[in-house]
Length: 301
Ligand SMILES: Nc1ncnc2c1ncn2[C@@H]1O[C@H](COP(=O)(O)OP(=O)(O)OP(=O)(O)O)[C@@H](O)[C@H]1O
Image 1 (cartoon, helix red, strand yellow):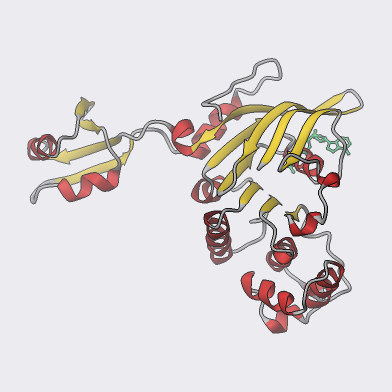
Image 2 (cartoon, helix red, strand yellow; image 1 turned 45 degrees about the vertical axis):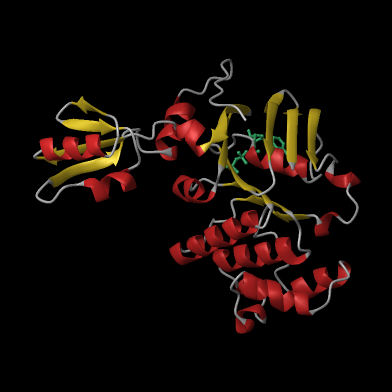
């Protein structure tokens, strides 16, 4: 469990993180979202002991990072994939870390396979790695000690679409096995696809937090159909509630439940979630309204 409580970080007179509170339960992926300079990296750096809090606390399983024995076997960290030793090969870098952690060399092959770095790639010097390869290597480092918490700052940066899909699957599996993931990203669609919970931060303050349902709320579906009557009859028969909305219907269920009910001969002209465009829309609306002197908290944890 990651617990950030009333955390504040000042740099001189600048308040980078302002009384931030959130937690990340086990078996979940928490997406940490915010515009450039919002304070995400600062919170993550404090969590892993690279920066000191001005006040408040940031703990993992009830302890500050520096108080955790063998932290690398409990917490996997990827903060800056470009900050890896350029002159070593990927395999050498992992082998050194494995040695320091007292892990068998076979663990290096396991994590290389887990992150999809091919043997010939692992033998190349890191300076020749693409950003996507560095991200994979950084994640291999994070996974090396088989931790049950992952703290990842922008891990999808530089990954191609297949890489992003791969990372999504890896993190979902990790959480399904009971792991706790805190992941920051600018790629909202990706975070929306992988995370169970979201924390939105702006100018150092929490703007909203909650599960997808809590934040994106409206699960109704808007449908325009021609002719409409047979569809409303089918909806009634299925026990679904609906209301007329403009030239269409607002139906009290998810889109995937509606498709099988559409009678033969009815043409669906439009079918979409009734709420706006999802997380990206929410993010842009909330951050557009960001004021340092107002705190908007959506559904809370
Ligand atoms: N060492 C530092 N000294 C002074 N100010 C800092 C320092 N580190 C961060 N800041 C400031 O704190 C604020 C938050 O920065 P932070 O890097 O945490 O944001 P972020 O949300 O991670 O942004 P990005 O998405 O661009 O990485 C910014 O205004 C930044 O300029």
